[in-house]
Amino acid sequence: MLAVAVAAVVAACGGSSASTVTHDVTVTVAQTVTQTVTTTTPASTVTSTTTTPASTTTTTTQQAGGVPACTAARLTPVFLGSNGATGHVVLSFALRNRSGAPCHTYGWPGVQFLGTGGAKVATSAERTTSDLLGSSPARPLTVLAGQEVSFRIVVADMGGGGGSQGCSTATALAIIAPDDTATMVVKLSAAVTECGQATLSPLLAGGDAVPGV
Image 1 (tube, rainbow, N blue to C red):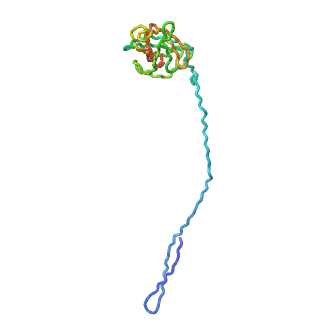
Image 2: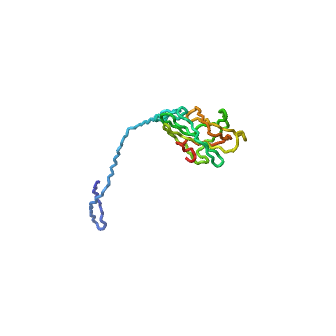
Image 3: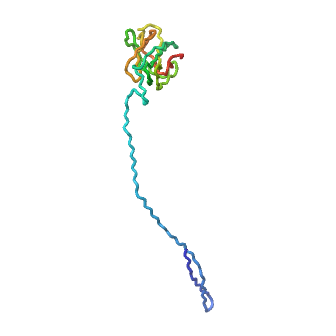
């Protein structure tokens, strides 16, 4: 801050003489100092590169843990029996792990009804997770040595012999396990009238597909 003394001259009026009065007046003048600070930041360039490896999809018969798929070479098909249910016949089957090691499976088997002499008969099994016996969700399954998985087929009970209205008599069932192409055949304990329409459950743990078990 700066202090400046200013002399003020006041002229007195009247008479022939003049007197001069001097007053000291202090005036405060604000001094503004502007400081400019310049900061220079070097340009910085950051390059980020992300490399994503190509994804390859392969079909394998082994899980990450080395457990092989349940194929015909490891399985024995078994007919578990039949039950009547509100105008339908429920046929239950199992695939038993006869190997000495665990195997894994998931989903629906392929099925084909067979008639006399092994001839194929009309088969149209709708894959479903819900039939007249209830809900049966598909789940990945590990089948230990000596254990089994099961599935069921529900067909309409036509109450007659084969050949009626396009129906045929089935005496056996051909089965193809998921993740496999080889066919397994199991005989039925009693002939079943098959008219080309049925529902098929997924593979279930143990005997879960068997009614009443």
